[in-house]
Image (cartoon, rainbow, N blue to C red):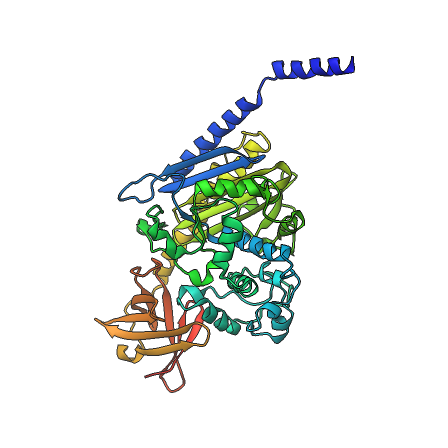
Length: 504
């Protein structure tokens, strides 16, 4: 009798339910697609792809737009985008594989596996653990200029990082640090005996059938199916930018992937480390990646916190974390010149989201993440996250426009350099960042940074100069020179660092 009554109740629910599950999914898919189309237009994004997986099933996957604005070839499921810093989670998983193989422990000292590891602080050098490489609280200042001003090997990049200064005690603060992930990649190589890129392919990408994913940015061109990076410049509008191929810090953010492969990755994430019935990571190891390992101050978090109002913010191993509508979100963005990504998951609801795009800092990615969670986790279609996110970030763009305007207004016209222009030529050195060679050509300064970044600069005012945008980063850089008591050029102050003049 009880079984019969239960059967009748269930049947009535199925018959009279006003919104069947498939109808909800269809409505949610339509709502997300509509918001994305609106957002692409407002953010001027040439191409984008979004994937949502729930309970290991793909509930949304769509590509939008084109790879390149000139040839207008459409994006497809196999078009490669840069994963940026969402690479970090994969590198942490690779270390997790080594943990499962009993070849290292999260609490092992870094120097146990990488004896050459050296930092500016001897205590942190000796006490740093594998896990400390992954949580951005090592205590050493970031040094991204090491790979934006130069293209030396990973070994040399890490070696020069020893000049970066200590800024707080070990595990006593927060400073996002890409270079430590490059060190993590070297640890993988040292312990496994093969390069981290090959290790990731063998133990993660191949088992996940991510057959189109490239672990080196330099490998994408042979595929013929990849996007062009773009920037919405505050003065010049939409411009194409150069590819960032900094594979020397590849473990921090140089993997490229596509929608087809990412859906497998998300299915793995929503199944506690299992894919197609095969366990890739032990459950204990998989769960450890997503535990909060470091607290993040509000100042170090995304502006979206003004909209989500989290009660706590933390960092796992390769994942930012915060509470949202009573659930824990693990997520990470990826940003490299002209390209964006975001990955996010609510484990307790088995729902994961991934977005790629080829417009620099197109924060529609955040809107898609939260909209997808609202729709597919909470079945809530009341808020248009694009409107909220776009309004938030438009203020920051307006501030950048105003700052550029104020810089121009602050320029003092009709001034001259202290010395004749030829006195500013010469070689300038920074022990961590390398060499800048300056020559005078057609009354302008020609800067050559480590035979990598080249700039042309004109006089701004007094002993300050402004570079043109004809460089690999499409940036205008303001820099200045300092004279010593003898009235001679002593230092070049460039991108927040001092370069001492070493030749006349």
